[in-house]
Image (cartoon, rainbow, N blue to C red):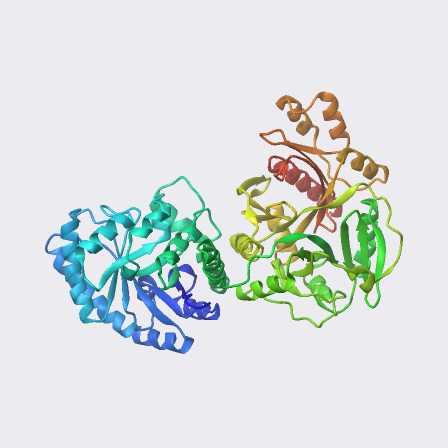
Length: 625
């Protein structure tokens, strides 16, 4: 990617400075910002740190921050220039030639722009003698200067070749400053660019910035538009991440650094396309649908899973020619049950128990999708070709699972790989896979959203906070623009929530449930009742509430109650019926849904479902005791 210079501030990742540097280098970065508190807390001298940087193939391209510099009266003015000289000495030892000066928050600071410009001119003279560039940044909560347009005014008044503007997307976008205002800036005077996204939150700017910044693509700010304006200007310097986030500070530095590189690659690609610049990586290849879902089970687990699948109307239509792998069908749904005693699925089962170990996705261009994944540092599965029974390319996914990529038209794949078994039956009316759901550790919640958005371009619905009887669950749905593929992501905020228990029991994140679509859920439910399939019980109080809301008549409520169906109604009148199975070995479960002009996922019903699952778990525990 010619001209692309990704960088990252050490504040973004957890650990001591030497640990941060190793993680950043491992993620593929070559340029960094050193955050001053990281250096101050390090037992290593600046010269020793410079040696570390050299050994790791890193270069410090910015030292930051230098605070409360401009507009001070004496004697503080003289003291701050002395402080700057000491920092210039330190930068020489680090090999850094740019310094960030953020707008002052000092109550003694003057708001006189000419006085501020005069201070910067003196600082520019001193910096020039050291070969250093000064980048002036507008803090969104600065005392007098809080807008990059004000900084640009002051930089022009300063009129010194060693003083320019430092831009930070968060400080501009959090204040709602139009990105078009960047067009007024001379790109030759842009010393550095820092980038951060964030969720839209109604709180003070300082607290928002210090605790909730995120990687580009993980929040709600128009960071791609911001970078597109800079590319259009002709800016070709570093695009650097500066992220303050409590969760990132408690997470693996390698994970965060890798996400950082992934976010910058995807951001640069998106911004380049907005300005019709040459595409740096292959375009997003849309998901056309789910070709299959694969389960990893032992032979004993397979017998129990077979009973469940038959109850839910599936037929075993094929057996693999060479492996202990079965194909189960209903409507457009293909489920693969893998009982192999070697290979990936077997290893996955040994680690996680009975589990959904892989998804097969139909995409528009397999080669393009694989090339984009490589550019985004998403690992390709390198198992032995054909070992898993399906000789198609695959990527590593959530919790070490696999994402197989198949062409939109899979051709004779099934006939080539499988011997026909039972003829397809009519089933119970399941037509396709409506969505898949994953549960992840809270520290990985944003990471896996970035995976799906950067690789496949999935859009995000509004994040939901779901009440579990044992805590709070964060949930976010993502989908293709046409809804052909949907995934919900859940992370428990308490150790005893269903999502957290799943992650703990499975020894890692993974797919927790599959949602099947049906055209008539009442009819489907009656067929399930006829075979005494295990269904999650919903309490009568739930249906009384639906009547009270005016969403159901008593007769309709009786029908839903008889089959333990749930209902959600959207603001525009869309309707969503749901039914849940009991969990298989307390690991994964099925959902069946009927959608009528409805785009959500029944978030209002989630607390009822979680409470029902918690009761079922308690009943099982009591039985075991």
